[in-house]
Image (cartoon, rainbow, N blue to C red):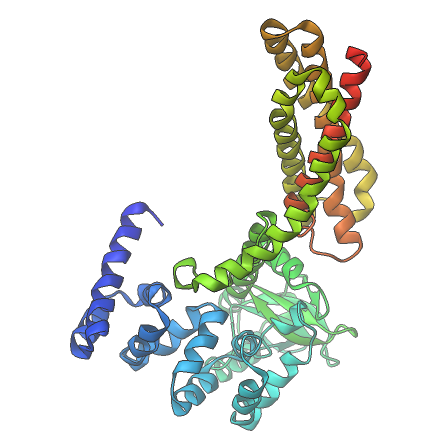
Length: 452
């Protein structure tokens, strides 16, 4: 969103919040009516909790459900708590099963159970089937509403099935082709069906299928769907039977959720799971304070290292001037490596078994980076202070960059190997580790070169 669009949206939100604060509902409704339907969700996200429920009730019925589906699951949960029971029941019934599961994961268990009991039997069964899969799996994010085509049918018969399910299927643009045992044998696009003769056999029109298992990681399946340009990815059980489908828009939603979480943790905070401006101050504090406490405890390692080499600093005080430079450079080098490898893991470019290859590459990368910085550091320090001091700084930069890049590159792979989110072990912990170990290298090199 451009600065001009952000400014325009702020003006719109202020124009709606002002009459809501005064209790002037007609003016608020008139202001909402001027907002383009596709931007209504952005407006509601920026209103505070008191005003959001009132504004939602003022929306036209033909816009309300679509706007609700575009809100983040966390905000949906809050909005559910502020609406009347009848409104909540209707919204919950109108959602697709996979969207209901996103919402149920954000609701208190008692409220979620009550809403599930109020669903029509068919909708309750579909939702329960999706809820039965473990959290984090693609089975919990797939849609059970799909159209499949028997492999022995004709194009005309396939089109009849599509027309019969046109209004309740998640998508009809990509259709799984199944055998009598419901095993996926291919996929056929609606475009190809429309282009074919009605008497043609579906098996002659279909293409090879790419599938994902219900227990596969949701992020990995979503990334596979988007990177391969698939409009939909069939989801199968352990016996290769079709149980659901993942559409490209749901895949994009999963990736947005996961990447927001990774970005927050790489920065040393927990994800907010909602727009920043609509997040209460105390929730922002909670998302950051635990990590700050953990990192503060870790930083005591640096203090202990400085204390251990206090005598060295007393003999040559100029060494203290370069401490921020060296630990900062090491931390940045480690973070660069961690971010690169974490991204490669997400894309499937590397796997935990590639740890040796990654280690050897990052050793070389770190050495070359350190050599470049070390030459510059030696030249500047030798001119300003002393050639021996310059040699200490140059050598330390080579050692610190090599060590930091190696640790930063390997740490995400080790995290994935022990089934921990690589983002948790990335930048914050790497920075703390590199700070302490970098100082140890610095003072050991200084002692060796300066003979102190």
